[in-house]
Length: 124
Image (cartoon, rainbow, N blue to C red; front, side, top):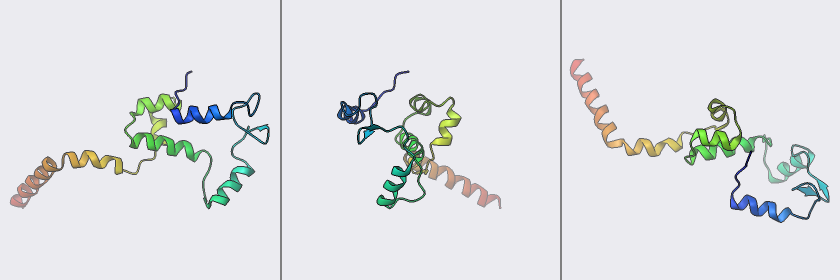
């Protein structure tokens, strides 16, 4: 399966060339095989970050994609999820990304709500 990467990601990977003979990322000449370890915990502590797991990065990435307008079926392929339902579980949304759709309909929505309120008031 092909994995599309941004120019920034490709640049980061290119800067790793030659640092290790078999792995892209290494530390002090040794391959990095685990990311959720003591070094990760120490880095979080130094940065003042609490209650954060490595896997939270995947959730954040998916959420940012959805909020940026990436269609769920596209994100499903990018993230390698088997179903759109799994994508929805990963992409925790704040609701702010929906505001643009509400404001685009504000005029007609306001009229509909106002007309319904008037007709319900007259009935009561």
